[in-house]
Length: 509
Image (cartoon, rainbow, N blue to C red; front, top):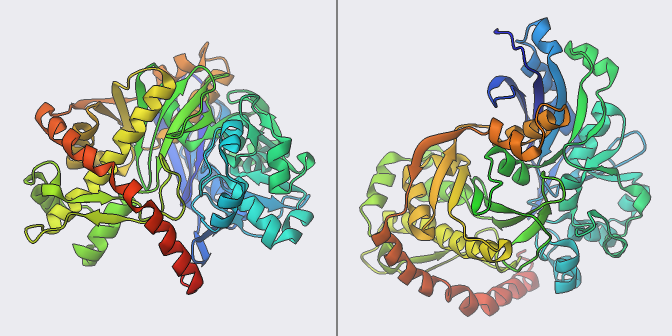
């Protein structure tokens, strides 16, 4: 193991499936890493939970494995640790940090009735978040109405950041760039909102302290540092995984957006002042006093996986298939009039309808499996184009470059389809754990290695030399089909509501 003269930092990313710990240099190179899984619990339809104890157990294992290969001298160079994590997920805990019930996750959609009951344009403007399935506010209101004893017993209600910070330092502290996604903030002031707390049924003293991203919270507990073989390590306020991806790809300049083509499709752009709009949600950024305008589509690689698993190669577990990609490439843009609303898991940006469903329109006898698959990919691209347009208006600048991460960005076919539909050039990150890279940026800034978060972001980002550029002819064809695609949701919106009503009446929800 090589020695390093410059400081090292530990970057954590606690996601829905695992916690990763990465040791990073001030040039953004990965020295070593560790990983440990987290079990996904599904106690009922539309319900997704974690055992919060696994947030810490997986973090402890990941840190241990990440530092194990380092020499004693290199361990001493680790000066700070920062946390990225799944957003919107929360746990109710007692005074000792023990969970009162399983944590409710961001992808849990049990609170549809509360979204309808409490969501409004006013709440959107106050919090920066349209009424939707992901913000914790509505799921906390669900607890208030369905499990009132849970909130009554809870000493604290915390996000993943605050939970891990407590385990690392003994203090209940979250970053404003993390706690904001609970949808309990008056976001323009970046602090808790009494109005939103009343809807949730919470008191201020049940919530963690707040720190700005990139600020030092406290040293790691001495017993933990000794166990890992480290000297004093400062725990630095981190960021939700989406905003962290923006820092990890240095997507901080006007017109440059990050794009995570993962389980969901998430795109975002930085803004120097608070803005809100229907086609995006607004989040606290890692750059001090800035914001991120972000669109979210609950249809990404999960939808491609679903199709391949059920209709293409179930024996291969639905894994990507180069032969299917080759068939897709032979089909003209627009899939010969086959258009898809990719709302298998409802719709977030830009319609924010928890009762929306997927739809495929335009089938003809000449359409094949490859047409259907291409139409799924194009449907996600049409939605992305619509959302990028809304973010561009909000940010007051055209979007000229996408910096892409996630498993879907590795597909050459899908990259080209997204570029051809949006008309925007794309470059991919060469870093696998880009959210961890983003909080490594904050840790390096906190210990004074860089003068600004923006400078640190550009120093640590690693981007591919290869660029995917839109084909003008394909883009022109897609513009025609896009006009038709955008008429489908308004035509079906009432029907989606009817489907929900009948399903509820028949007990099929």
